[in-house]
Length: 205
Image (cartoon, rainbow, N blue to C red):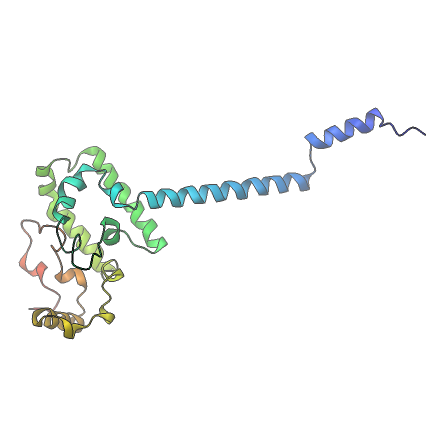
């Protein structure tokens, strides 16, 4: 008996390769979808981390020539312990959800970068108080969340602090003040025109 493949059978075989069954087609689409999802998610997170570095922040001369220049030499930049805070440590949340929200908000900053809103020292100084208040308000609304990444009040030994610091921290704890209420101007210069009451905590003296 001959076992040669009939022409009709051969044609069916090749058609099955070019026209896979619905099950095979769905499996292929699912595999491709998962692969694209993994690559897309990985690329998204890579971009998130790339834009979450001090080097990226300093790629804009507005930051490098103004606020970063002021930051250099402060206690957050260099100190006896060698623990250094970078731009994202203070200005970008660590929690993923809040980080996404902050990144979306930052798109407005990019827009103003391209518009040249604060591209000269003079323009920056004109906007400094407004920009500072925006940051202070945001930090106060989160109970100084980014400050507390390093400065945990519950772990703070106030008895080891100097009298003035100890008294103010105890007062702040009672009045419900948050870090940024008192600690303005520790990493950047205070803006001209700031009101005296803005430098004191709620209920403080």
